[in-house]
Image (tube, rainbow, N blue to C red; front, side, top):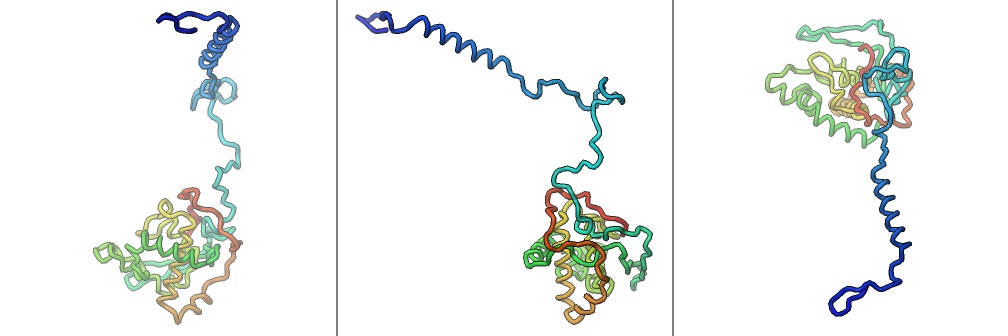
Length: 251
C-alpha cells in the first residue's frame, strides 16, 4: 500500500490471500485457547462435609491414614520433645516436701530426663539468656532468685532456683514446667519453641552454678543418672512448628 497524490492505493502482490487466511486462523485459535481454560478448580471433586454415594459411610471427607505425620512434625526423640524418659511410669511415687510457708513441693521427678539432650554450647547459652530475659525475668528475676519486677509489685513469688530442691532437680523438670506450667505459672509452650526451652534450661543451670559456685560438684553428683536415650550429637529441628503441642507425660 502506498500513497499517491494524497490518496492510498493498494499495490498488487504485496498481501496474498494465503497470508490473510493464516492470520484469521491464528486469531481464531487464540480466542479458542483463552475460552477453553480447564483449571484444577473446575475438576470433579467432593466439597468438605458433603455427602458421597461412593463411600460406604456416605462421607465425602475421609480420615487420614493411621500413622500420618505432617511434614516437619516427625518427633522421633521423646526426650527432646517432652523432657521425659522413654517409658515413663505414670504411677511412679512422687516425694514431696513442705517449705517454710507451708506450700507442698515436689522433691522427686521420676519420669524426667536427667540431662539436656542437646550439646550445651556458648551459642545455646546465649540464646537461653535472650529468651530468659524476654519470658522469665519478669517473675524469676535476673539471677533466678524469684524477685522479678511483677513480684515486687504484688504478684505471687516463685521459688528461687538456688535452693537444694531445684538445684538437684533433673533438667527435664525445668523443660516440663516451661511446657506444661506449674503451680501459678501457666504453660509457655505457645510462646517458646522446643529448642528454645532447652536453651532456657541450660541458662538456668548456668545461673545456678554462677550463684552457687561451691556447690556445683554436689549438684552434679546428686542428680540421677540419665535413663533416657538422649543422643547429644545433634538437636532435632524443633522450630517448625510451633510447637505448642509438645506436652509431656505426668509430672
